[in-house]
Amino acid sequence: MGTLNLSASHSPGSQSQTHPNSKKKHFHQIKSLKFVTVMQQNSSTSTSSSLRDLGPSGVDLTSALFKPIRNSDPPLPSHRCTKISVVGVGNVGMAIAQTILTQDLADEIALVDSKPDKLRGEMLDLQHAAAFLPRTKITASVDYDVTAGSDLCIVTAGARQNPGESRLSLLQRNVAHFRHIIPPLAKASPDSILIIVSNPVDVLTYVAWKLSGFPVNRVLGSGTNLDSSRFRFLIADHLDVNAQDVQAFIVGEHGDSSVALWSSISVGGIPVLSFLEKQQIAYEKQTLEDIHQSVVGSAYEVIGLKGYTSWAIGYSVANLARTILRDQRKIHPVTVLARGFYGVDGGDVFLSLPALLGRNGVVAVTNVHMTDEESEKLQKSAKTILEMQSQLEL
Image 1 (cartoon, rainbow, N blue to C red):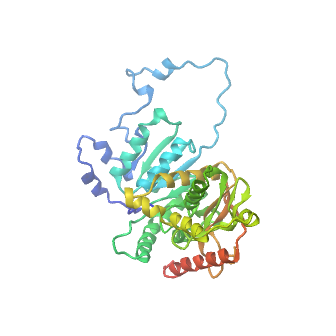
Image 2: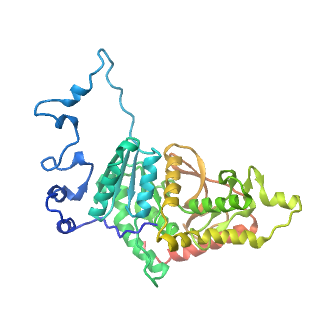
Image 3: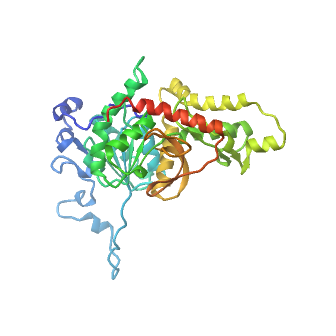
């Protein structure tokens, strides 16, 4: 879903050409093009935001403004901070970062991108909202060192599909980008959990797993978490109820071969289809198919209207981050290694299944009821993804 061509390397010589304001020389003097918080820039050229530096020489304004409590105990050791890194500061990446900030999910957010001006601008724009947000340290850099120690790394960077370009060609270009993204990310944060958002998300989650060397539970994709949200919304709208009272999953590929699990849909705890059958209430199967097709076409409609999707995926990924970092052990339909589940076989294929998520990433895959028809469609979806994977050189 990201829209940026992101590379791990960047020529320092091109930096001076990207920033026309010669007065802001400190921007060009940052070693390795690191754009961290204003306080952390080159001390010889930047203005610190510390109160100690705002007063006359030799005057400690912090001590003047804040008087310590006498006979108090020393500060307790601080708890480990929660850090989230977002790779790619396009529309999707920034929607995710902004949602994470407003929901107070992290103590530190690190942004990474290959475009220094865009990156610094997004960092400053978020920092300037500090008075309206929970206290969060915001850093940014074209260097992956800024992501060191992350609990969660969210990858949104990727190439846009060119007019007339095949899906395989787009995939191969994004695999090339991932070769520059995933290894340094994994090296900087070897204990982190990876969430892949870039499209095609199923195959790229497989690529990230291969390139990172992480255990399978610590690599997942955003998958059909958003598709399922759209599905729940459409069913809720159709029945005139709250979407939060609808339990429904889209599984399989995040794309045209996705599978709607109609047999397991419930509203307020009532299994919908079995209830209708027991009550001998007729329903049109075409109506169900039309709702599913509306889910599949939702992203295309939004892109056609505004040029890209952002807010819904921002909330979707922030929701995954909350479940993982706070060990909420909620069930989300996300991209996981599906081999051995629901009859999926033939290779290490990643696709969306309802999965129990917690602080260690993917805890388990949920044993949701599927009809024979749904199971067959899921296996067909897996074959579609495996065919794409077989054409990659990993």
